Image 1: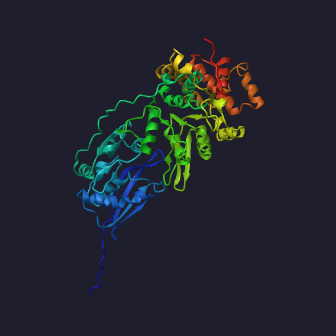
Image 2: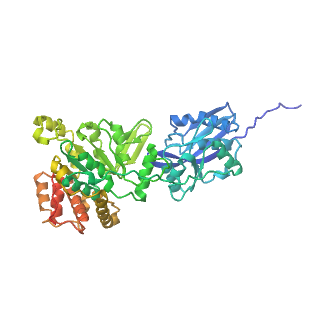
Length: 522
């Protein structure tokens, strides 16, 4: 007698994976995009801490696959992004998801994608659209040992900036499928044809204000922060806007850092070239806390202080900014970085900036200055009190500018030096500082810790710092201020071609710190 028939339904489980990159801030992490097809009701399940944009990828990818002439597997699809503990943001995984699930379905042999990262967002018609942050993503892939990348055509020039990576581009999912299936051609990055750089404001445009010009030059030489006080029309904004024109171009390391930040923010110019000019950010005084230091829901975006990294952050009419926003700048100015904690995780952005502040002395802001002021002493104190002592203590150069006279505008026959002439001295001063601090990898004098300047071999003679010590003992100068005057004195000596500061350099540095300024004779 025959026994009962047992029916076993055997279903082959298919699996495939490809490589992509995820970003947290400007830090990239290699991500494995896994796809698994199994028996069950047709569905797409996403795992690996995806955000909303990534959860919606299931619909984008399905439409893109079908509209590219491929068959959508009518099975249960599980897409996992490893490491699963790393939050995933954005739509840059779309192309990797499509390739992985087509490979798992047996439609594509994925051997051609060994050691290749895929980056790109898919449109419903199968087009491959650009995404933010491609440069730091490709750089992260290189650090992880991956030397090939396929990116959207619009991002190809940006990705090709990273040395050591072979970059290919696609404009449609169909082209990528043809490459994987039959070795079809991929696109090369477009040739780099940089447009001419727009002219920068020139220091020669500033009438008079010898003190302000000197302060800008010293600040540029040492990477120091600057605060300028004075009536409207004294030239505070003009001087601040011309600071980038005397700064040297960014070196390769700094240029990659700045370009990566601008890529994450979606601010790179057309063509995706390296940013070589020091950036200049001048937010309006109505800017929010998030606009200044960064923020937003989900992945925190960089703020103005990070977008000005290795450049200048200028706050015009600084007392008009919200006090909370101003105080939030204290920690980034000291540490050179911004740490943003949100429910979705913590994001860190670099923020090594030259901070420039301009302020009128009172709310009425009469062009005549103090002579025409109509404010009460209490109103003046309250107005300037919006710039707190701890914030001002972090600003190296603090000067007061006098109103421009008719003689400055019409009578004076001497025209101020051009930015090009000042920039040459600044470059020489920075080269001297870089050579001096090269062992410790400090770029400029402003980055040197105070203890290093107060210990041999860099400690100045006691006679040269006698007045500084007296100011410190009397309480009119803080310990932080003491160190900042020392840094300023080194920058002044570098500008004037001396190996070490002398007493006159220290005196000028102290004057620039406390509201005035004077140069040595000759």
